[in-house]
Length: 152
View (tube, rainbow, N blue to C red):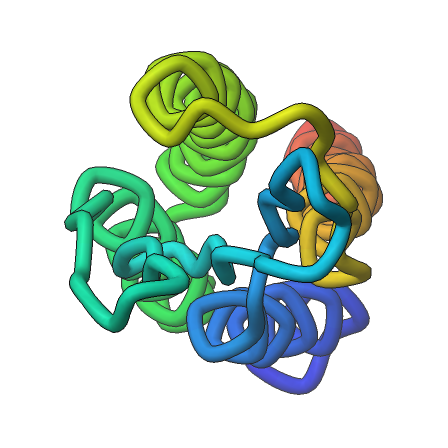
């Protein structure tokens, strides 16, 4: 059962989340348009070289990657695998909420005018879609197994 399509989906989710942890989410651009502060999941590097930590975002991404990788190996217990996939999707939605809170707090603290989104911010949304596809595949396997048991 480990070679099923849901395992591929969950492995891609893990890889995308690791990439998201390493890439910038966006940049805060100052009023002069020149100075920018890079916003990464682990923290914001300010224009003057100081660092403002946003470790909560990194922690959520790390937890989601571990859950997705662990869910691959729960193929013997499909209903637990379904629950873990749903939990992972809820954590990723929480990631967006935490990112918005940090963005709002840092925007006021830095006194910047605009924010430029990075491409890594869309990867958790892709992971949510892949989690949904894995959920459907796992659930269809469960339905097939129950139908086969009923025929015996």
